[in-house]
Image (cartoon, rainbow, N blue to C red; front, side):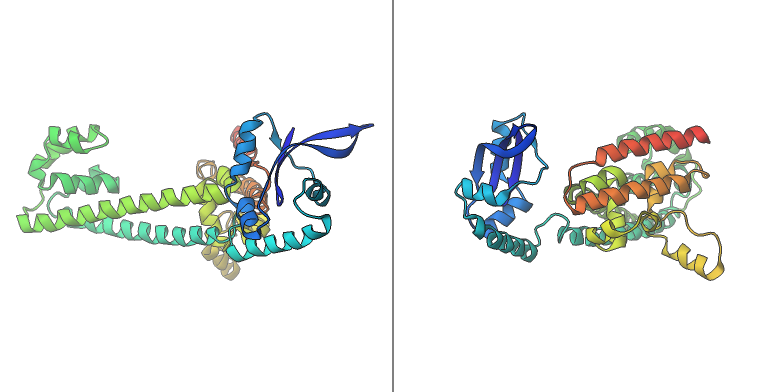
Length: 349
């Protein structure tokens, strides 16, 4: 049995055949939609309780892909006359366009702006983290060389404060990586840093706390981007990772534009400066842009990075088209193919 979500409702069909030719699909069950274009548009592009109900009733039924004689079916089930269906479909199409609820339309703009906000916040955090290190290094300069992670550094400054408080037991309460406690504690006792007043320390600790708060907001924004990308572009998210996919979306301008870009352009999205430098100086052209952030590209050997980026761009190009036209899920299949490609390139090295 096959299950279809159509503009007239959700249908469960069983094909009737004569001499191996499909005559007319046998309707096993159905739940018709109200004859309201707004309701139909919402069901087609969003949550559909009727589909959920029939999937639960017929767990072995799979979503069909065949074209259906919808006019004939609409008349047979009593939804409308065959001649009336085109007018209803036109009204539904208008509602989808007006509301912007179709997958990849409207919400991709939210992702683009979220990415821009996240990157701006990330840049600001990097600058603030450097400032904190310079500021606190007046009191405890040696810590800068021991703790490289900015979040852990800010946590230490906020929670420990004066270096004299950096005992091994106290450090173990704060540090994620406990092994640093044994390194930091003795260094703190022998530090060449200057003493600071309570007023100075209060200002430094408050600054560290503000960095941690901003870091939490940035992490929340990343999580939001991942969730929305997985919803509007599941195939791109599976192949490119949700975040790299969002960066590509931001560079392209929309899911539609990304879907229409050739793989060769997707490969170098985000490398505008390198492209302009190539055009001006005739140096080697860039082999990748934001795709460098993908684990398969960043972890590939120097010789294989370009090949990996090219293969990945090809898969993302396919995934973007499937997402934009709301095709069946192929992301995991493409991801598996990329994993195999990575193993192949590694073997060649």
